[in-house]
Length: 108
Image 1: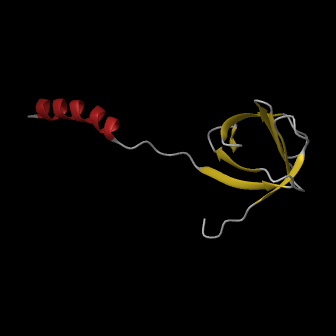
Image 2: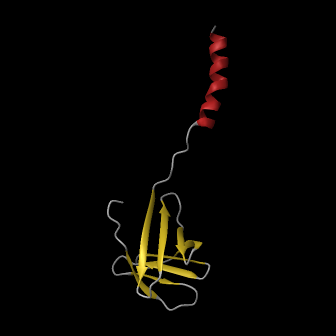
Image 3: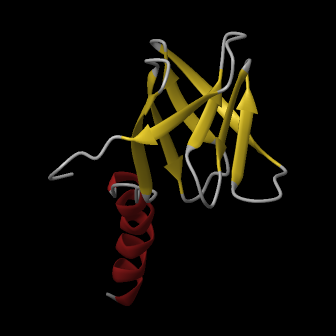
């Protein structure tokens, strides 16, 4: 009987892992509105150092770059700077750098 239990356990344990739901990473999404009228959404995941941007209807993945104060992300012609103090700035599509502020979304 013990062999039977060991056999059943050996068969069922791997299948439990297959059907178990994967644990989602913690995430943060922010919506920004800029002085030039640009609006974009940026997503951050705890397990990833990149920023995932949705700007001008296109998804853009930005790599984290070296920064003295705050955070700087760039890629695909887009640069996003989020300083420790002051407004965030974005530069994209060869447009000048523009200041952006987080849009507060009540209830979220």
